[in-house]
Image 1 (cartoon, helix red, strand yellow):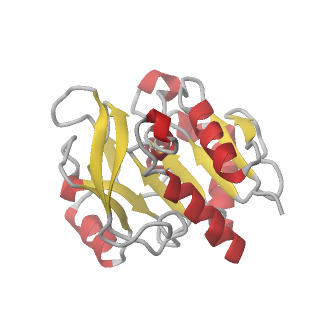
Image 2 (cartoon, helix red, strand yellow):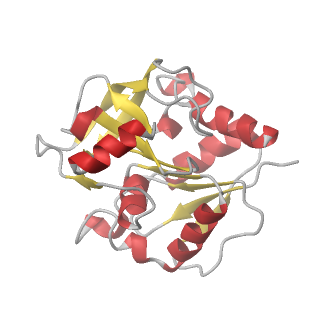
Length: 225
C-alpha cells in the first residue's frame, strides 16, 4: 500500500519542495501538494508536513497568520484523529501558534539569523517520528532560522520533560532555547515540531543523512500500525 503524504504550502514557504523531495525519496511516492487556502485535506493521508520558510513574511509573529489559514482547521482535526503531523522550522512555529504544541518560538538570543549544521541529542526514541533513532543518539541536522528560541514557562517545561515529550535537544544551544529544546511532541505523540531541518539531511551529496531515519522510521512505524 502506497504511503500517502501531504506537504502544505503557505505564502512565503520556501522549504516545501525540499520536504516533498525528501518524502518522495524515502517513500517512492510523491506527496500531495496542498495550498494553505484549501478548505479540505486529501482523503486517507498517512502523514502531513508543514515545511519551513517565512509564511506571510513572519509579520505579526512567525507562524501566527498561517495558523489561521483555512487548511489549518482540517490539520487540527486530522491531528486529533491521530494522523502524524510534522512541522519543521516555520512549520513548528505554525503548530505552536495553532496550539497543537505548547510554548512559543521567539527571536534568537543572538538577535541574528542562524544557518548552519548543529548537533542534536535524541531524547525520545519511542515516537513515530523518532523510532528510527536510539535514545541518547547524537545526530547532526541543519538549522536556518531567526526565531527559533523555544520558550515555555517552568510548569510547562517540567510537564514536557516528565511526559517524555522533548524529542530533540541541542548539544550546543544555538538560539537560547529553554533547556536546549530543539523539538517537542504533543501529548498523543503524533505531532512533532522541530526547528532543525531533517529534510535537508537525507542525501549524502547535501552533507549528511542523519535526517533520513526520521522519515524512514515514521514509514516503518505506520506500516506496523
